[in-house]
Length: 216
Image (cartoon, rainbow, N blue to C red):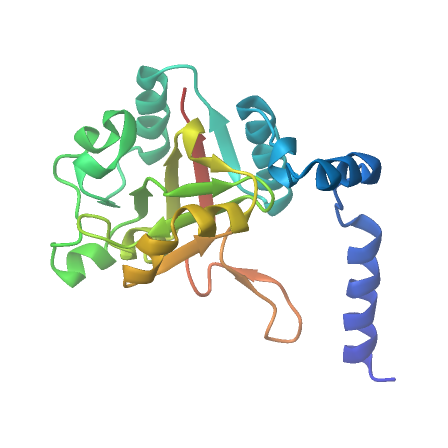
C-alpha cells in the first residue's frame, strides 16, 4: 500500500473516531410519525440552536462571539476590523447598524481594484445552519458575494432569528427566492484544501479566517 493511500485511510479512521454524530431518540421519532406531527415537533429553542451553532463553529475553527446588545455588536465589529480596509454589503443590508460604522468602505459598486485591496469583508446572512455551522448568503442587490469570498477575513453578523436547524429547513423556506437568485454561497468555516500532498492549507480559495458575531 502506498504511503499516500495509508495516510488517507488513517485520516478517515481518525475522522470516524472523533466525528460528532447527534443522538436520536428513536422512540420519540416513532411516536411523532404515528401522530402525524413529523420531525418539526422536535424543533429546538432559539437558545439550543445558538448553542449547537456555536459548537459547530468551534469544531470548524471559526472565531465567534455572542453579544447582548446592538451597541456591543458594533463595538465587537469595530475592534475586529481595526484600521483595515473593508469590503461590505450595503449599509441597509447589514443588521444592528454595522454598515454605518464604515461609510467609506468598498461595496459591490466599487472598482475591482478597490474591492481587491480590502482586508476584511463584512456581511450579514440569510440563514445560519445550526447542524453544520454554515452561513447561507443569497446574492442580491447590495449584497455582493465578493464580500464573503475575496478578502482574507470574512466577518458575518447573525441575528438569532436567522438560525435554522438544518439545510433542508432553509431550502424549504426559501425555495422560491433561491430559484430566482443568481447565486447562493454556503460558508462552512475558513476556506481549506488538502489537494497538494494532503497538506491542509487555509485561505487558498477564499478567506482563511472567518469571524461570526451573533447579536441579541
